[in-house]
Amino acid sequence: MKISVIVTLKKDVLDPQGKVIHQALDGMGFNEVNEVRQGKYFEIDTQETDPKKAKDKVEEMCKKLLANLVIENYRIIDAQ
Amino acid sequence: MKSSVITFPGSNCDRDMDVALKKFGFRNKMVWHEEDELPKSDLVVLPGGFSYGDYLRCGSMASKSKIMKSVINFANSGGMVMGICNGFQILVETGLVPGALLRNKYLEFICKNVFVKINNKNNGYFKNIRNDVLELHIAHNEGNYFCTNDQLKEIEDNAQVAINYCDPEGKIEEPFNPNGSMKNIAGIFNKAKNVLGMMPHPERMIDTSLSGEDGSLFFKNLINNLK
Image 1: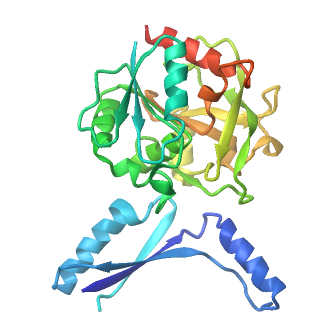
Image 2: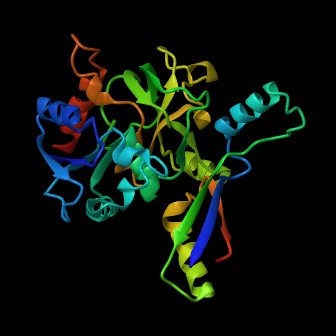
């Protein structure tokens, strides 16, 4: 079963890379952009077959390693 | 006095630290990250570098390596643990010291000498040091110290800020902040002050012909405090 996770910086944490990407987009003529926040995307292929159990395990992985909860939030995208 | 320097894959200031510790009288051992147990030590150092290629987040992989269990136990039982640069990043990832180290504010790798003001001398690292300001070297891409407002209040209430970026006279102001760190923080302690994480490299300032001597002051003082 594959489970995806998106990790992003919390709202009050400065994201200088996102800012620079925003400026670049602006320079390319995409003037409608309000803000860009850069994040990380993980695809986890697990042997677990029970979606609920798999999700719980991935949540534990997020808390212990994939995200640093001082600065980041994580979002688990349901199993496929 | 016995010290141990932990080497992770990608550490590159471990040997400089070994030279510095030995120069000032430590009997130092290099400890590979896959070891289970620390040798008997009065001081454990997590050196600078790029452990695990800075994968995921700087220091995150090293913080989960085998030897770190022993280092965390050593710290929790009051042992002195010092993390320099990448070592500081490893310390925040273990949670031994609060906060996180973000990408530098202006997205540049910074490699230069800076001045830092010692904020708290009531601990084993800075007790009896006569200087208030030290000139040290920094070389990092992720040294922008960040913590939550609640954490910041706790850090300040417990006098956990060790050193702040400043000018040569010790003025702690924004123009002397190289990387965007909150409150110009360059180094912090844990609550008990036996764990110190800092971005500057004292081991690069132990020889006048190469750089400067302010690192020598730090190490001489440190070994005297441990005696």
